[in-house]
Image (cartoon, rainbow, N blue to C red; front, side):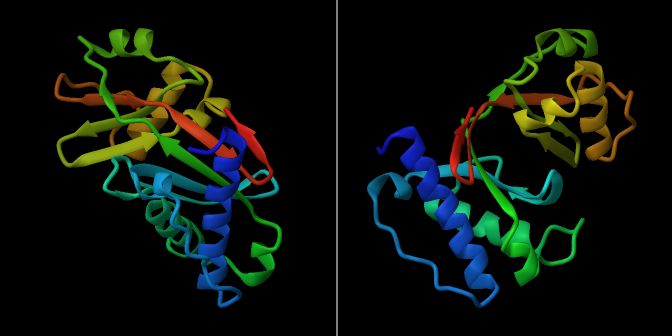
Length: 187
């Protein structure tokens, strides 16, 4: 597998090429490096200046890393329901971030206080499930929601649950990410 920075540059290039192809600007370059064929879960986040412009991903590894990045990049650019499809003008200045997720591990907790005490701000991505509702926050969300109470409340809200709701049937899993962005490896 290539070094951290090289890996990031390749993944960001795959994301940019997929978006460019969707805009009719370029054809995605085929890559056959073996590490790109390994199953992986990724999120692609797009930003214009500091504003979110799209973020779509996979929580579990179900396809090859290169395919997951390309698919999620296209979805973040053109199918995020919170935004209109990315334009050619925006594409020229959009920043691309690719997060490669570790496998999820259960966060077994007795109650909400236990959950709050066991969260690792800045490290954990959290996936919350309750019945047919689910939501996730990448570890990067801690940058804007550093307080565990606020983080968990906003995550429940994202899952269409009351912000202060707790039930023993809530399931939490955690994961970490390797984060790569335009021109820099980030941790």
